[in-house]
Amino acid sequence: MKMNAGIITDKLSETKEFYTKVLGFGITFENEFYLLMHTPGKQAELSFLLPEHSSQQPLFQPAFAGKGVYLTIEVEDVDAVYKELKQKNVKIIIDIRDEPWGDRHFAIQDPNGVGIDIVTYSGQG
Image 1 (tube, rainbow, N blue to C red):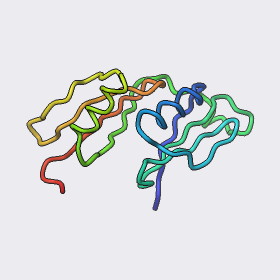
Image 2: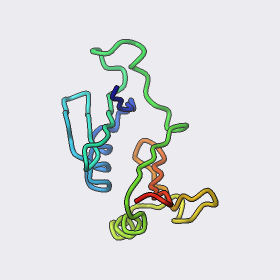
Image 3: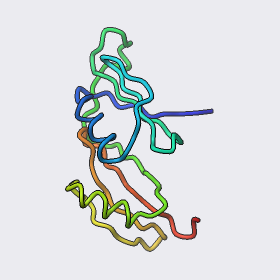
Image 4: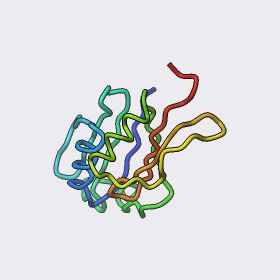
């Protein structure tokens, strides 16, 4: 089984720019109303769809309201990614920190309001 999460948004161009320039995602497929992107290692995909598009059934038409969704991106060296994003002047929402349960992470936000937690788990090689 394979899965990708999808977000319905009218901000396709801003979203494409954010995920490609800030996080290094690639474009798997794109047309005028749909954008499918993949992580740099192609281990996961994320899709974006224009709201109220005539090609879609009612279930897939309402736009995401900007709250209640987060993504976790696991990286090998969270400190290096943090430094890189700071150099790109990306707004850091939660500064880098160590949690008692073992995560070292920080968070940013995409143009749609989605929180993105960038993390390195302790004990992982």
